[in-house]
Length: 122
Image (tube, rainbow, N blue to C red; front, side):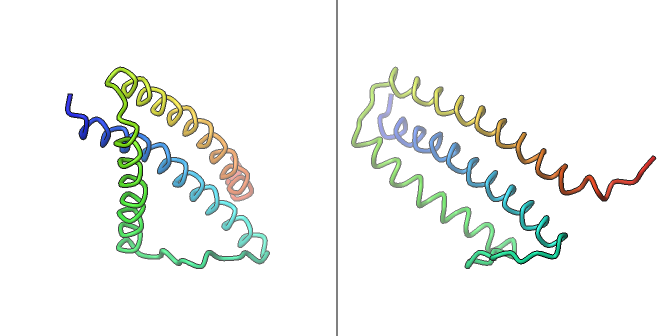
């Protein structure tokens, strides 16, 4: 198998785990921000204001490059064998799935807590 391709796929799989965790944290932070606004409390905004799709896509591409290129370099340096690399990919994908499921469950609990007072009574 092409070692460069193998290392690149490993970098992509690792990036997917990191990206999932960053996105979920961002979603949960937005729920916290919404809750503070609803309760008329102060909230310290991020220095970076990503308020347009262009900025959002640019941040995603930048994040992709910031993570994937160094990860690819690390995996190239490690020069893992095919069997080891596939096991690592499977493990990273499994961790990504479990972490996403757990984190999204927490997100749903958080958003339910914020939206429940606004639900219409039947």
